Length: 194
Image (tube, rainbow, N blue to C red):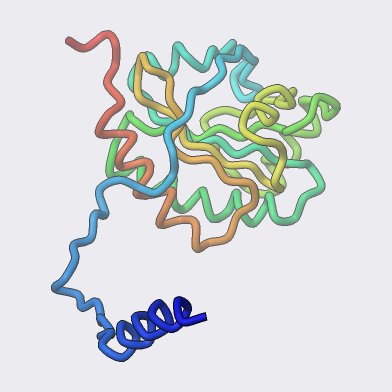
């Protein structure tokens, strides 16, 4: 019975002498250079760009050093429209900052909608993507499923990496998307440049 008293007394003594530690700004540093999103592998795909009829292969675009902001949307999804409008502003500013390095794609997340429906959605909402695609079910599954919308940032040249993926969108994500694109532009080199 006497043996439980000693641990109790030690615990009580340590609590009495414990000091609170307030972390102050000068006690730590911030690292804003790398966003919190994990890097992941991309899945190659080929699809026809509905805006110009040309076939696009994801890895060929990435091999050229482009960074791609890609929104997977539903035709009748109001949050997807909100995301598209927010992304348009982000993409516009990033294209101005990094001319010839950033592309913006929009793809219908499922394999049922037609090209006519997708183009109508883009036109009605006054979007200006670099590419519009249909039949995105396999791609969305690779990125974790549909989130109304699903947004990814892809790049890293020949290594074909993704830097950001998110199901759903709020304007609060714009800062993360911008910092992720900046990071991706820094590491994405064209395989044709030596």
